[in-house]
Amino acid sequence: MTTGVTLGKYAPLHRGHQLVIETIIAEQDEAIVIIYDTDVTDVPLPVRANWIRLLYPEVRVIEAWDGPTGIDHDPAYEQAEERYVRSLLDDTEVTAFYCSEYYGAHMAQALGAIDRRVDVNRFQVPISSTIIRSNPYAYRKFVDPIVYRDLVTKVVFLGAMSTGKSTLTEVLAARYATTFASEYGRDYWAEHQVDRRITLAGFDEIATGHIEREDEAIKDANRYFFVDTNAMTTYLYALDYHGRAPSLLTRLAEENATRYDLFFLCGDDIPYDDTWDRSGVGKRSVFQRQIIADLHQRKIPYIVLTGTLEERIVKVDEILAAYRPYSNFFGAQASSEAPN
Image 1 (cartoon, rainbow, N blue to C red):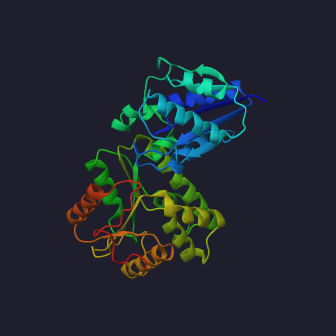
Image 2 (cartoon, rainbow, N blue to C red):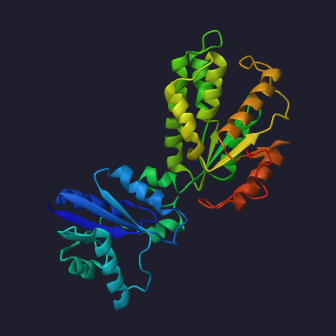
């Protein structure tokens, strides 16, 4: 049984890191990746560790929460790190230590392992985490879509029919020079409705189709990604049509609580656009109350948008300017209607 080990902050994980990990997998029976907690990024350690777990389920990932701090090339720091890494590995016999950096020499020696360097000169993958952090959008080709999604602030707009979600989503995407995901359910309904109804199974197709649309559009998002509606609303529509929701849709609606960073509720204080495919202003009022109740039941904080399109844009601008991903954000701008 041979074992290869590597370590890093993976802030973020990029194609160069993946090359090292994939080399271990190809050359050794077991691959171990040690990932450090760090303050060079706001992305939490569990999120960064999960990137590796999702991309390489066969890899053993060790989260290193209390690693030593110090200055590179300082012998005292190097010795402290060697002791720390040995303690994390316990009695594991290491065959080779893998990396692309200078520290491969002293770490390999400390572990009694082969010093295996991969793409030291960055010919195969000419990138670093520092460069990516400076502009994730410009260097997005160097990170997997699973990673890139977590580097983008995901904003979803909820609300009953004719509350301005679609207009706001498109206008903001243009304003911030980024991509957006339109409401897949509206397109599906137009194609598959029979007497203004769709089947119960169709609601699962709407939920999965909408997520696929998001996953494709976010690949080219620039810092922010705007989404018109999500599976939570689809879930409420299923209840309205059939009195129940299919199991897949129910699960996806539950997962939506953590799929987005910011939830905005578009108010129903604007004129109702009474098109043939809608059920009337009275239905809008009832459905709006149901959406609010659903947000409260799921304990999801949200921000209410009211007034004209311009007033709503100003509110979103204020929130985005104050928002810091992965922070404890619930400032004065947040909705007073959020759950107790």
